Image 1 (cartoon, rainbow, N blue to C red):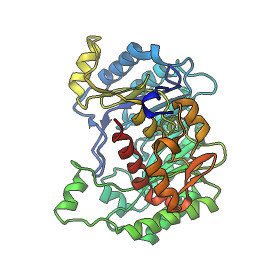
Image 2 (cartoon, rainbow, N blue to C red):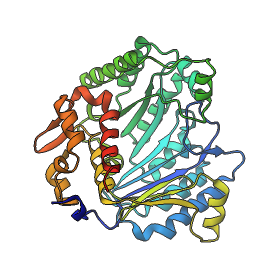
Image 3 (cartoon, rainbow, N blue to C red):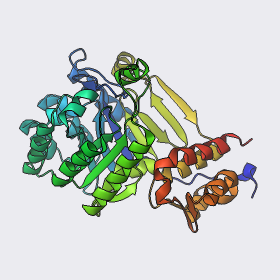
Amino acid sequence: MSRQTLKKNRIPARAGALYVHVPLCRRKCRYCDFFSCDSGNTPPARVVDALLGELQIHENVLESPVNSIFVGGGTPTILEADNLRRLLEGVARLAGPRTEFTVEANPDSLTEEVAAVLASAGVNRVSVGVQSLADDELAALGRLHNAAQVETAVHLLRANGLANFSLDLIYGIPGQSLDSWRRTLGATIDLAPRHVSCYALSFEDGTALHDDLHAGRVEEMPDDLQQACYGSAVEMLAAAGLERYEISNFCVDGARCVHNMTYWRNMPYLGVGPSAASYIAGVRRTNRRDIHSWLNAVQNRQPCPCDSETLDWPMNMAETLMLSLRLCDGVERRSMIERFGADPLETFPQSIGKYAGMGLLIVDDRLRLSPDAFFLSNSVLADIIHEAASFK
């Protein structure tokens, strides 16, 4: 079949996942490039009104009930109890008995009152931004909590029936050693989370740490040490019963993040809030990073200022393959054929042939990265996108 005849994209017409972006923080972390604004300068009640208002405008594109709800930010748990309850109850009406309902939280903002609100609103999963369990590393990242507050937060979650929690960690922090990283991993395992995410620190343009790096005030962790940190995470978490199911994510049996699986399978999702992204009917739309224009647009029930892109079939297929290859299971060739009308081996022969020949890509009835290739995955995935971009 020629490339020109491929026009399939068999995905649901409605989105099964909802992301709600709460763009408020007490203080910007030194590494963070997610959109947020100072909670002291932006009325939280107005933000909650706008989030619920934008959701009402677009909820006709959602499945009923949705498979997953993810309330992130920013820091959703810095909302006062009444506003947090109002937001969570407003989105909970879209959930069913099997909906995964996640809220992001920071240890310093997880109080007894907040934990009780989460539980009463039907939240059944909490993603806690731990990042490190070494106080000097937390200070280097600009985090507001200390290591002791992490244990307190976990205790509060369990006491309120929220035992299904994920802990997010970062390696590659300036000044971090392999030993200190392994201590963080050990302390994390002792907290018995059902899910752990381990991400390499990225020095994003516009962040304080990026400025420090280019001014020579900090140094980036060498690649070989980062690879050793990643290897330690794989080893130690596996020994504790946390299976690696995606490049950076580990869980006990049955605790994969349903919401993130939607992203990795390139299935439809709706995002509300400034900077939130949506992917529906082959169109990717991202609300602009501007709190004031977003607030005004929703208040006046007008379209939010956004950037949109309609993906053609080769790029859509390439992105689906790229995202799916982040999963340890990879992707079935048959499912790609059913969705796009062609075998990825025939559509991306150069990229797949190159990395299969190097032993970095395993090709049979599925396509998946070899375990040794996970730390080098960016090169493989970038080549697939480049090959798709060359199609005429």
